[in-house]
Image (cartoon, rainbow, N blue to C red):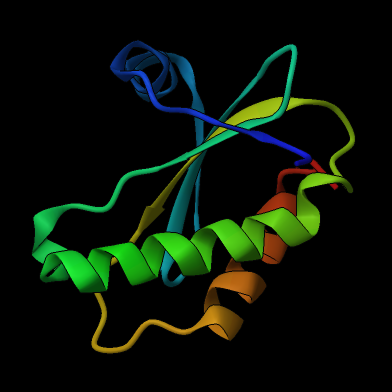
Length: 106
């Protein structure tokens, strides 16, 4: 595993209050420098039922995993998907790459 998953509310609250934000067409990302690379996902109930939210999380984890080892320095991330009709791996993959390049994290 190249990154750790964030699970505690305290970790998420720190990123929401102090983190930098960047936006793309289907995804928003919050990030903050840290000792190790960590990633968390926030998917609200407005996205649909539990099986839809779980699929979104799986897609985002896999898309982020591709770029976790290419990061310049360790950061903590929170990924916030936007509500859409369909959710695809290719779109999330492109958005994560675009955001990481824009913020010069890769």
